[in-house]
Amino acid sequence: MSEHKVLKSLESLLRDNFPQVKLVEFYYNIFESPYRSSFIGLGGEIPEVYSFDGKVAFIDMPSGIIITLEGTNDLVLKWIDGHKGFLKLVLKITVSEYLKDILDEFVSKIIEVRDIQEIYNEIIAYLSKVTWSTIGAITVYDEVSNILLGKGKGYQDVSLHGNVMVEGFFNIPLTPETAASRALELKDILIINDAKNEPRILKKFVEYYKVDRVIVAPLFVDERLFGMIYLGRYEGLPPYTRGEVRLLKSLIPYLTGVLKLLKYREDSEKRLRALLFVKNLAEDILSESSLLKIFDVSREYLKEIVKIENCAFYSFNPAGLTLLYNFGFSKGELAEIKENIYSLDALTKGNEICSISLKNLNLGYKILCAVYFSIENRNFVAVLGSRTKEKVTDEDQELIKVLFSSVKVASKNLFLYEKSVEALDKIIEILSQLESKKDYFTATHSKDVAEFALKIAEALNLSPEEKKDVYLAGLLHDLGKVVVERAILLKDGPLNSVEWDEIRNHPIVGKEILENIPGLERAALYVGTHHERYDGKGYPVGLRGEEIPLGGRILCISDAVVTMLSDRPYRKALNKDQVIFELIKESGKQFDPELVKIVIGILEGENL
Image (cartoon, rainbow, N blue to C red; front, side):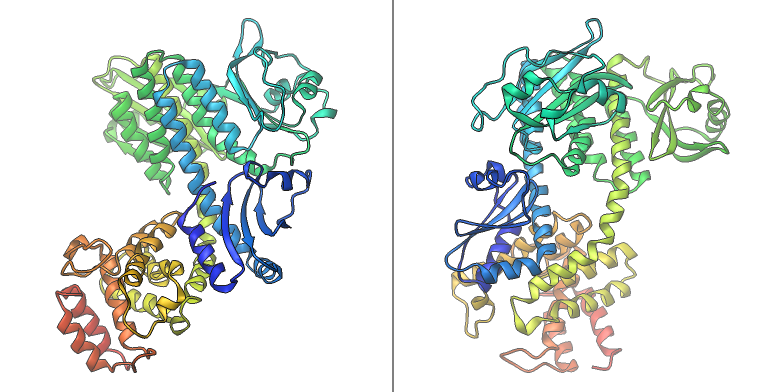
């Protein structure tokens, strides 16, 4: 089980509306929860909403939110039925945080492990956990014997089944009738959800381990078979889904790189360097949102890790080569490289990530080579050059291939990222509605703050991207109040110290919720700083002056202006002249003096 801010927000919302709600829990794998017997009894059919033993579960396999109730659950069920999209969003954010925690834990464990077999154990345990498999094994292909050799002791959840894994059980001949052979033929992950009736699965495997759901995932390095991953679920558990396959596909390129690198690094120092390279590369390159930025990160890694200082990227098709990115090569060098590289046969063979020698060019480089790769039916070639490095070692080649595998994965993810941006407005709308439900007097307040903040951003001639971030932050600036008791928000009199501490914490809560949603990272920073004061007397941190991000300073003054211009339960709205007087009085104290000038100009130009 894992607890996160967004889950606390959901619990607060439910408790405010339904007194019978006593506890809200998240489980990445509902079959690893204390309530698994209730789910196992359902067999392979797991409903989206399920009531049992005074609890209601909202499930998006394999994860679930479980709500414990005291009394009737009819109203809660009705609410869930009308908010399924929102609950799926909560699950998505919480699952993302959970998997990041698991990945960090996984990498930390591997770095500390010296024994190579134990590293295999950690890898298969990690894969089994994130795909909620009850049994798993990793094998490496031996070309001489044509056998997939089991590595490490494998993984098994013996709490559900008594037969422990037998050493050597996963030494499997790669013969045509096996599931591994079929996965190799497909060059893809093979899912078998009826193993008992699948002739490619060994009967002794099914009978001994009571497994009925199986995944066989091939591992390829340099277009050659490296090994196979076997994952399984005991009979009676739900079938594997496309979601688990997508997750596995996203992880395999990095795990394959780790395994390959480990073969070349038996001593702990080299292994540590390789693992950190893969971890840092994954974090850096997968965070980029344009192809040129991905190329730029790639070039930095080539220079830092492989010591190759010059790099150029081309796209190509039958019409010719197009330069996309260059660092270090002169125009004359690029012209000669382009003329020679397009005639190379390797570009037409369709092999992904293959090295091409350019030593026939006399440009004064000790190393000059090209790497061909393809992304989503688009062909690319990277030209690498160094005047100082003597040669590319076997280890360098492995690092380069891991790098370009990551480039491929990151580039494919761009499509998914662009799709997620399309859904961002809907997510923001849901979060805005969640915020406004806490305070009936501010139903339109956030929208007004966002629109006023946008006017300031336009007056400052900020970029379109910065304007969008300021506007989104305005819409969601008080999202953190979802964890504050409604009675505190609506209290007429002064707050006591405990209540004030809860209010002061809401910018942090809002920031922590938003920074986990792709596309809202910068808006999250502004939300977290919109109650800081220019004189350093604000909260939650006490930042001063330009230590406060510009977006945070814009939100601070926008929030104040909109509040002063609005009727509140305890006073009538101020007029324009009164607002301007307050702005001048607080210039350099609560507000940025430059922003005060801009806001006064905006107010004087409007009919209020």
